[in-house]
Length: 421
Image (cartoon, rainbow, N blue to C red; front, side):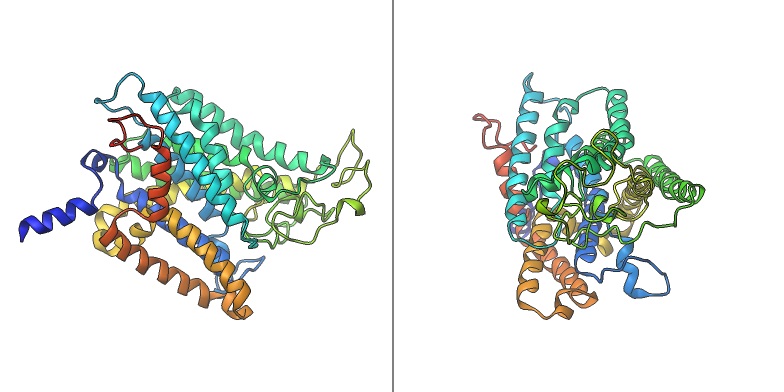
């Protein structure tokens, strides 16, 4: 009887050399990120948040869950590519190849989910592009990675927002639009993944490190959101810039919420936008002239979810770092209580893809009140938790996780496929 139980545990548990690298807190944070995105996509969309109105509570996770998802991705990259004593001289090349193949697999999955035509902005294409851009920095010096990450986070949003008005036409392909101009612009989100790469190099099992992440994240969130609010007040701007949007088609790109209105480059997922034939050919869609396009200072200082500005990105990243630190702190202490959420985190890709498929099905077949609101949001979350817990207990790794893992090792030579990446 003991032998049977031992064999069953061995079949489900990760290989022995994976155990030191697995962090329950990271799985917990990733699970919270996925559940947060489900809430943002299925929950009622409201431009404003009020503690006294439960109908607006989904606004809390909008945008921030995706940032936490990307941050965890960066941490995972470090853990997957960390040097090991038993590796040979080609280890770095092997790791880079596996990450590249993983990125390709994620891009294909993202493209298929985008092809469903839902108003949900699919993060996986940007996710995969960031993976590829991170390849040169997997073993780079910490100082170098920190400087590049800071540049991407501080300069990237400004370049993105200031550059959008000067675009004559937006690309029609939804994948290109999503990665370059949508709610997940690659240049900015690359910085988030790089921060995760840095966090992954810390001794994350140490309580002091976990507490430091909570404190650092809290300070960054206060500086980002608080600083943005103060700057807006100094400029005489309203506290928020209006319904910048969510990760669904209500409009999640910064340009879609600009006062100039409704350039084709702004609608990232189906919001009303002027067609190219409606816009003057030689006039930038954001206003001004080709030599001096208008810059919307309201967008550059916006702190709404998915605004893409430096204050909003810094604030959301601070929240993500704090949540990750808190997850690491409580995961080992809460034990079985949080195991269902951790199960969602271990099957994050599968659950993420499944919830978008569910969104597509409900959007086409269900009444409006069943396709959006707290009833479908809670139902999908509960279903995801139950199914993920059962799958993890009986079958281990999720189906899409297995597919991506197989793809990442498909070019490994004989004798190396037993290693994980």
